[in-house]
Image (cartoon, rainbow, N blue to C red; front, side):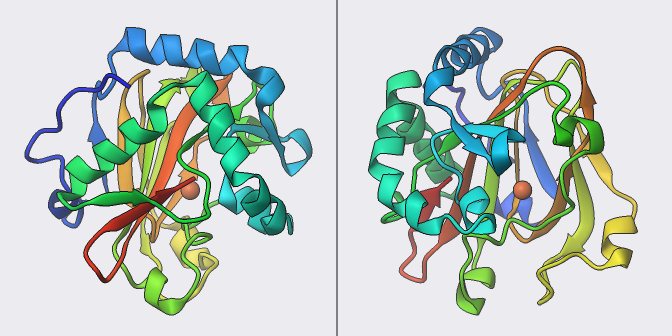
Length: 238
Ligand SMILES: [Fe+2]
């Protein structure tokens, strides 16, 4: 995956001072467009999530956790990675290399989990109409130690929605309650828009939401989660 080098200010240290970091033109537009076409061409290999409300290339852990299909996620993880690699050769390794550059520490695949994958939201889907849920990315952070560890979520936009579909970042940060409180989800948020090839990085413990979107194009984005292990390396999954 051809991506530009990160700037010194595009780092984990800088993220700790901000709610989110935008990495403009991480992929050039042609690369992003070609990758979104490859995702669309692999439609037969997409995973249906939430009964067809959204789709993935590869398998997203949170959708399986929330629908009681964790076993299926882990059982199919190696094959899911093969499907991702077939459609987007080098993407998973490329994303891990980007995370390593961002955190300046070694990065490994999270054992047993699926590697980075792609979310596809079709026009008119529930998220398009209402926006996503207001949430923390805690699903892969499975105990208090993991939830208290440095963790990040990286989204690389391959094909933005035609209208809106950015990411709302709230001031709230996970502090023990898995669900956002009413006060947290009503707090003033910042909306970060992205063009094809732009990326956003935020702490997984930061409250966020996909903005509703409109238009005839699917919203297609690569997603990866990363968690720092006490040994000093990070592990990446989808
Ligand atoms: Fe999220």
